[in-house]
Length: 346
Image 1 (spheres, rainbow, N blue to C red):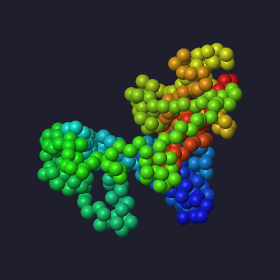
Image 2: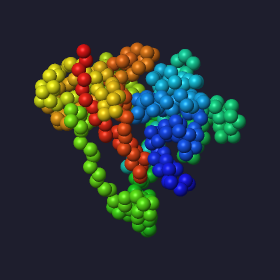
Image 3: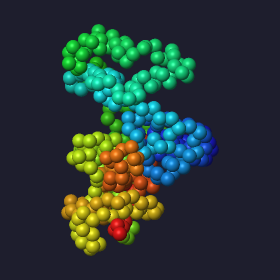
Image 4: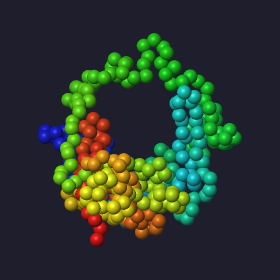
């Protein structure tokens, strides 16, 4: 560990992909030369998009595995098209609820084009890297049958039962009825409001409230969230969902809109405290938001021509998130620390 604690800081925050961008650019605390992008849209997930692009330019190799031609695909050296969830087997879904069950996800149709299931991509890459011993199975069914053998089931028998098997047994907490057993992985085996383990690591043993900064004059705190019809930045191009909600809006308090001479339905650009811009986006003037904040649905503003329905529809909240606050305990990033002004479109 470096004496100045820089490596310690990096490792504590390494659960957040934001913290991986810096070593890609600077080579500190160690150089990163390659990146495999899977299950995320780099340019709609990671704050400070210009820094992410700089990091991608520094890398020797970038490989993307995706089901859609998303924005970051253009930055990749190799693209492996993955089959969608309706075209592939996935890992078993084992749930330890009050009534435990195991569910099977299997393909409904064959993969289109040259797309391949994720398990096939992982196995083929492993074999070509000389790691055959870790993939001692030929098909997804072989793998799942091995997993199911411990409870006397197979893919076929699970399929015959409708794809879901209710397991016999006790609810989760009943496993801890024995004397001295506990479901809590703490030293006291109880719920701990004060964490001695965090204190030993020189972290707050109890949550400490730290007030956030107020918006500068003429600016609003940028809030963002999900829409019930869409999943992150993945479904804006899906025909039915796009038809129901094709683009996002920026919510602005109705009284503030009147003072600024902005009307419901006007198009504006968002400009944040560091000069980053996003838009154009329609204004939704409403009383359902406080006067010092604006709100927008996450996942829009794609700049990928291959997403022909979602291409340049609405605005990206990520584009105006150039700052974030990193939690030293979990590594989670707080992104609602950016402020924007509204610039009316000419």
